[in-house]
Length: 480
Image (cartoon, rainbow, N blue to C red; front, side, top):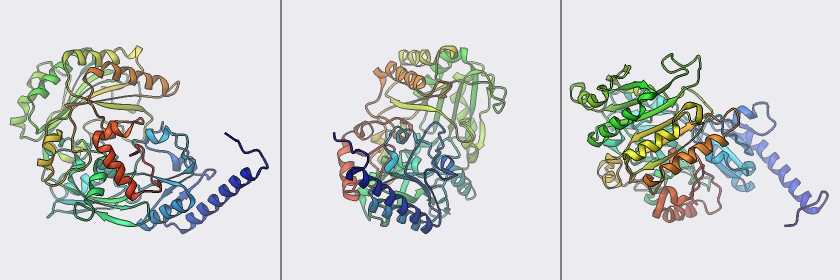
């Protein structure tokens, strides 16, 4: 490869191109209602920071649009300058994008200011801005006795979560959130604002739901179904970590008999001593089972008999308003550093449980902080998805698996590499029970497209080639 030397025509041409891009980006900033930040600006580090504080992004610019016209301007400018556009709302799954060292040609578009939420209580539909979080949507829906298919965290963006799949506390009975998206508003790579649904462009609508959406345009809003749920039977049970083997086994046995109205998870967690943690967690290692049962308390309580027989030190299961579910899982209340990843498991025999627990094991010999097993199946099975979707499903209809395994660790004091090695070792031990595909929202490293979409990856790439022949869009998990 010939490297341009200082003073050569090639070097001068590259310098002129950079100067031209810089001038055009400055001009773009003056035309926006929102904000634009570039390297060297006083607020640059704050602007480029994702929710995951360990994701170190170095793009060409970061734009926070406040109106759809801002997004159109960014996409048009990027296309004209040969730059790419990477949409983000909260940046919870920013790790795959941060893994790349070539973001210097990319404008990150943070849609967090596009957070308007409108609820139609008669149609039971919410129109959700591209940057709205589940906390805002859940509160708005609850005013009308309705609930969305929210995740476990209040500050997760609705768009990325839903278009990436969306495993809610109600997913075993209602399926993935992606299949209850009714329409998507987006700016496509040609700079056009479009509303896409099953009638207007069925193939693009199929591709958006399950791909994450970011590889096909900048999503500025979506419409999703709401459901008439106000209260559920929910809570958590907690034991010291030395009870992990028997608790995990009892929980696994519960999942074998659980109705689709019940969604539960079991976690082993090692907490550092932190004053902001409650005393029952700070500095401790604990095993926790939490979950939601969409049944009256008298019908739901017997499901917990096997676990309650193990005498948990904390038991909070009770009739619970839906908005409180956003705090049930005890997810971090704000941006946090972490190195995480997840896989799907087809089954969970005793041998798999033993491998998982041994991999986390003694807190003094592991770099992992949490290992979680979440029960999926039910209406998330591909063969059941269409029946509950009440319409065409997306590129990811469901999972051919019964459990999700998710684990993470804190990337300090010596960086993320030891945590990454521990995650790889865990997944290697669970390889005999690993599903054929992975779940996009829980995958925080780059994968081949076929690892998420299997045989549908080619069809998905064809949609991408139709709407983005110039390769303007850039997603955390690339379509192809």
